[in-house]
Length: 162
Image 1 (cartoon, one colour):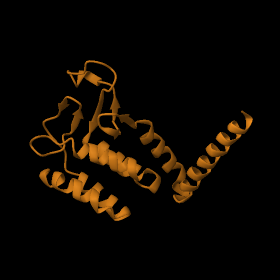
Image 2 (tube, helix red, strand yellow):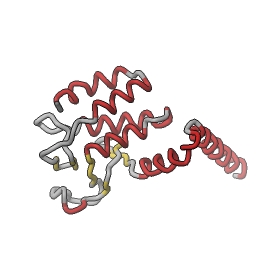
Image 3 (cartoon, one colour):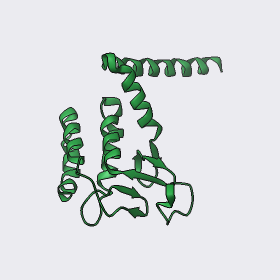
């Protein structure tokens, strides 16, 4: 009905205006915030087995994950890229939960040896890592939102990385 369509338009318009207002907090860098956020959001995927993830690459590039049997859920997470995506997503309160989810997924992908692998796919992990930036990302998220539960959830895993 026309009234239903009008309500939908009004709801979408209000959401668009709220999003535009969030960019205002970034002043002269609002356009940069908009572009970076669009890039990060474009890669978000909801995987029913793992929640929200921010893969660097969708699919199975280079045959990196040889156990992939279908194209339903193939993806690759890279250590630093995924940590920084989590931080970018969490920069304003609207993306806080997305940032938390992505950070949890990449930290919990740690190897049996205790480090977050440089590359991770559902059935393959690389055998090396990079310097541990996950602790810095967690610290920045804690400073912004003061959610101690997130620190309690991830700190031991991050300490294993050292």
